[in-house]
Image (cartoon, rainbow, N blue to C red; front, side, top):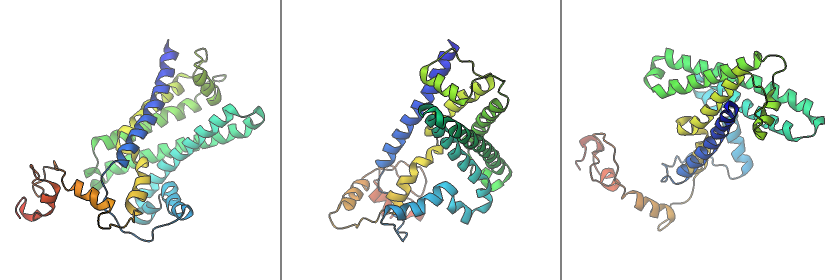
Length: 278
């Protein structure tokens, strides 16, 4: 019975993660037009887009250039997660490829998984330490920010410890994957590693519910904000959308907005230094 619950937890974590990511993407796609940055040059080919996006996504190029101290802890965390994702893909490949390819795939996913878990663990602790130690960061950190990083650190510690302390003869990563896929309740899982897997499933389901799902917004940030160069012509789609948005009624409570029952058009034509006054 315990193994059935454990497998259901793993499947539920994956399903909730995927469903949450889809919901996030749909919501982003339906958001009003963002303030257009008008930053040039704008790439007009896939190769040009990749030339900008790959260094930023993989290596956090902007953070390296503008906040080097934060890069030293943020990069290991993010790159470690990429390596863990690569390890999962390699493990899945090992499960469906001929036995002749198993040995190199086995070594590859072990290296990626171990290095990724260590890097992400070190990065999560580093980010947590910086948020606690630096007053400026601490002021802008919510309790959820600390919880998220602590959740990552604890989960990764369980997985690393479970892997290193795995007793002889216990099921390895590939055997565990096959057991989960087949719902095989006879396999014997190391308790510490199984606990780490359960925590990982909960973390996976939790990510889309928080701002940690910002990776989904990358596409929209680039293509809908930075690189949106559609012409704002008379009678065009942008003007029609903006006319609709100006009729929205904001609910912000800030004194300089003084929303009340006013529309965005009324707010935008008000003097912000005098609240609702013209």
